[in-house]
Image (tube, rainbow, N blue to C red; front, side, top):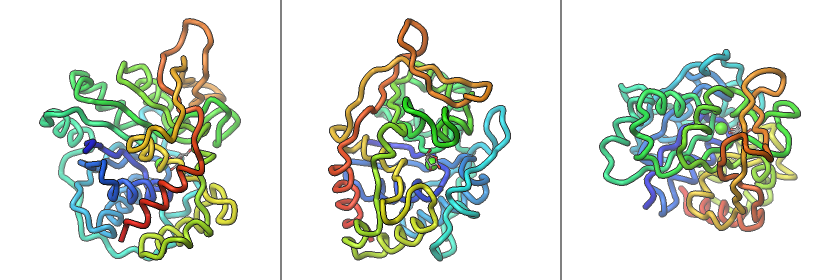
Length: 296
Ligand code: BDR
Ligand code: CA
């Protein structure tokens, strides 16, 4: 099994990604860390606890950074007031770890005999802080498979994708860290959609919950399908063949109107990272529904 840490800001598509990850036999989810992003850190952390409670998984949850490194936390309206509106989740019976997310990640990486894959599906604040504080742990990271960025225009504005826009300084630090990075950005995630017709093929509690929260998610619609950005990062870890990935030279813009843009450079500048440039949308949908069918 591939050991992973999911760093997240649930978030409706985060909720789907986390649920799917719990039911993939290839994965061993060691830890969930929360980060300020779609909504404030308190709602986000409560949402993460609601998810482990809903799926009845004993996976530790640790609270992370309350704000981006240099910017204020601005949020993302597409996920509703609480970040996970639409479903009446049972009150969480799990509690958060005492350690801050950065310390919880450090502990796991230090103690692990095998390398761990980090899967950040929110702003990169926790990951940047961890790499800055404990650079010696870079060699314990197998890969960072992140949802964020775009080589073909943004979703917050013409230039930037939300996770990169929310904390561009953290993103720059992570992209330039020297760790093996796979960027799963809007170039592929906008082509990964799940709507009511697909969901109606699954008859379980998870499909019912997904249907309820997806109806409150304004990224896409239930007829055309809502956009499963974050699930793409999980799908890449279990089934990289669903994607075409190419090395590209990228620079993260940190200031000005294009802050958060992942700009492709054709000269010597920039950092070479692996960028997902194409996805087999049909196969992704089968992956999603096949996993959902195995869930509670
Ligand atoms: C990203 O921003 C958030 O709204 C989603 O959860 C996803 O991680 C897409 O731009
Ligand atoms: Ca997210």
